[in-house]
Length: 69
Image (cartoon, rainbow, N blue to C red; front, side):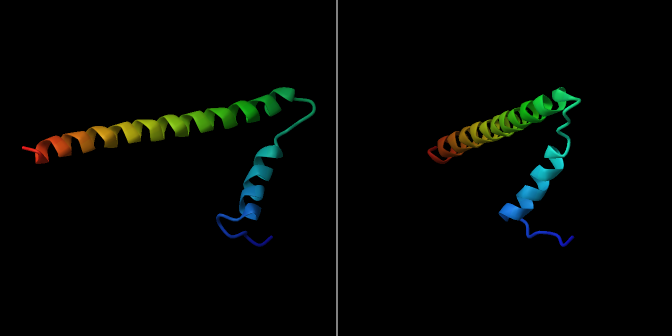
């Protein structure tokens, strides 16, 4: 199998396919864990970027205050 180009729909389909391969009719908890894991990943990335944005906002405020002196 030839690797797909990063950033293409095919690339992400391959990644999702690896995850979806874990769905198992004898283990329904796996499908639930996939959904819960996806939600957790979105939340974690949101929280990370939210904290980063707040940190930049504080830095910007401090720089503007310092330059206004």
